[in-house]
Image (cartoon, rainbow, N blue to C red):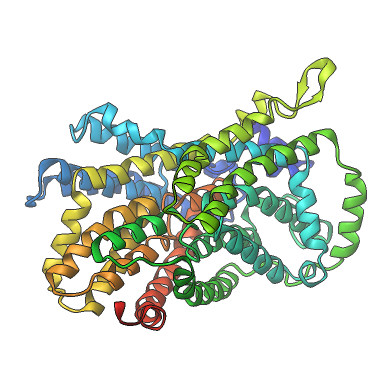
Length: 541
């Protein structure tokens, strides 16, 4: 669906077609494709104009400043700074900003083209593709709407927008403790969009918004989508198998210190931090993105009417649920093996390697093109034209983020930054090194994936602590936890990129909320983790 088609579908007779507004990719819209107030339009024009000139100026100046760095690290840093400016100010669509940066590092000779583009084949990219195709089927055939109606029909939840957001975040956090954050957000995103479309229609029917309002710019939508992304990040910290950084950090800590963190020990240390962070998420998100209405009046009658109109499950809905169920079951299965056989068992290693989440995602999505809805005419659950409309821009964006994360590690720039900072700050105590570890992990996770952050920062922190005569256990574990707390940018984590791909969350609002959670997460880790390590593991810390 083109931008013009989407706009024509969104506004019919100057009354918004809510369902059409949520169809197709609406992430990277030009100013003419959005409903903006004069003040908002002035701000957006200024932001994008500044970025258009600031990005190349920042890159050139930093590249010319004499710094005692190897040439490849110096140029990579200059280009990455320019790309970050492009991502924040959006003078060009964000995926294009990333592609410009990738092109620049090759043209400047930082690395050959093949080396630069190799990380784009990451399994996470294929997880995006498969998950987005599954989400397209759930939206097309109304499965997401059924899930949304079920959640809204719950007595405790349905009447309050705040409760809807809290309940959805809690479900996300619990699931992501055992299923990968990316998979959790991918499978719940269609339901979140379904809930948002219901709320948008209620606002429209009750004339609480303008007839031609833009449902992609509702504050309640920002709160719901960010709760989905951030709730997964918090919940993923709860267990060792909840997120890749956990396994990476735990393995590196065991190798360096000889201390193994058991599954239950990990949960006991992580649970208070996760619980307090979830409370903080709820309070801050609802304050910064106050929903347009506190109570969804008449929701019970509305839900009953909508459920009646949906009728019984269609063949296409059943096929979508089969594909979705198979995918989720295969995503969960390695975690079940980890709980029963342990993460060090040969069985777990074999199962997790073969049931890679990216491969599972594309295989599950492929079922949608194999399960027929009308065999005689060879009609299947999805057509390729449906798949072609997924948000390829977000896939490109995260692919470029992976590339920069890989280059930070391979060129040694991340290690250079870490060592120079540690030496310059003269870190000599456990507290100081822990604070440094948390800040460095969060900063790096903002511009790369959380997995890359853990893989880069933990190996830096361990020798820094050892050189200072400090047990590296607490600082390294703090870096591992902090790697999951990058909340500011779409490229910070896959789940950020997925919800950004919904088109509901402007990057300025993600940055504003993300800064708050970065600070809160850092404080919770620094203040609580040493105490929790001492309580759970005794003298290890």
